[in-house]
Amino acid sequence: MKIFLHGLESSSRGAKAAFLRDLYPDMLIPDFKGSLAERMASLHAILAGQKNIIVIGSSFGGLMATIFAMDNYEAVIRIVLLAPAFNFPEFSDYTIQRIDIPTWMIIGRDDSVTPRDKVVPKARKIFANLYYNEVEDDHMLARTFRELDWKTMLCE
Image 1 (cartoon, rainbow, N blue to C red):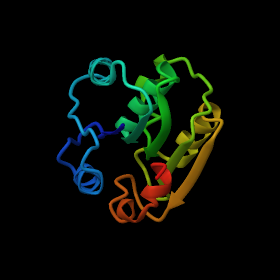
Image 2: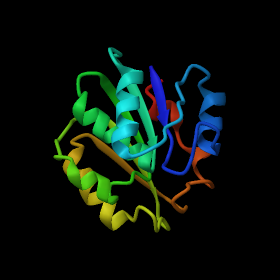
Image 3: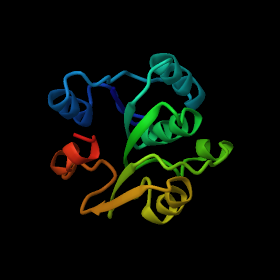
Image 4: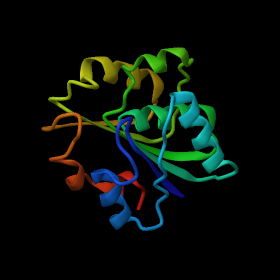
C-alpha cells in the first residue's frame, strides 16, 4: 500500500499529489488539516491495521511520515521524503528513534524552508538505511520531482 502525505499548506490536489495519482492510481492521497497532533491522529486512523506501507511525505508530510514510521516500524517497508520538515519546532517534541527502513530523501540545494544544514544531520541520526539526493531545485522541488526515479524509490 502506498500513501502520499502532502505539506502543511498543500492538499490532495497539489502538483505532487496529482502527479503521483496519475502514476499510481491506487495510491492513497488524503487531505490533512490542523495541528501536527490532529494530522497524526488522522493518519493513524487511515492506516490502522495496514502492513507493507510505502509512505511518501513532502515537507510537513515528510515529518509526518517519519513520526509514523518511528511509531509503526513494523508496518512501514519504505519511506520517500521530499524536503522533510525536520527543522520545524513541532518535531522537537518527539524522541528520535533510529530506524533501518529503506529511506530516500530528496532536498533542493536552494531550499530555504527546510535547509540541508538543518535537515540532513537529523535524517542521518534517524535513518540507518538512508539514500540521500540533492537536486538543483528549491523547497517545492517543482522543477525536479517529476524526473525522480519513482520506480526505484517505490520498490517496483
